Image (cartoon, rainbow over all chains, first blue to last red; front, side, top):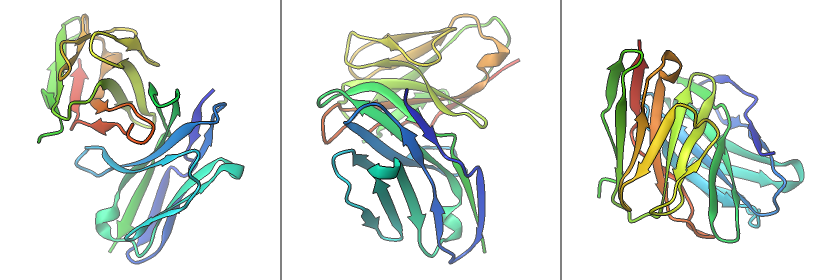
Length: 118
Length: 114
């Protein structure tokens, strides 16, 4: 069965600290997709990144970076030099693929609430 | 280009009342989804529509019905609301494909059932 675990319920850091949000997933499929979404206090869900299971390259986008390791079934998210605007709930999610299409089921972790204090 | 829109933004119902949540997308996506978000539970899939004319149950479909009215619109109906359906409801859409299948979400509808 598919499952996404975000063991960190809440994290609090001081501005400019680096912070890593952990995500561990379970799936039986060899082809799948992993996602991170941000939910700021305003409530909308903002797409951050999508990673395909056959692409293990890590990715960096500004202060954000993602570390995908199939060997440990992890897809961790690091924010470098955190800012107050990074305060949000961050969700990791998993979707199994069916040869080019989605089966329609995006499995979310329970989220990690990040508070960045000035 | 508004992306995914949802109406209403807020709604209060009494137990037993019915209502329909509306969702529309202007990205020409084939697939659309309804999720609910409860505190500490993340998001859970209620129903989805892989393409126009098809709908399928997700993880928590009981108490809901959906209609894929056309390619743009996907509505969620509560026939007889219950307090357990108090939640935030999100609609999403995506275009299935090996390199493109990312779900984009609407702003959500906060529903309270008294």
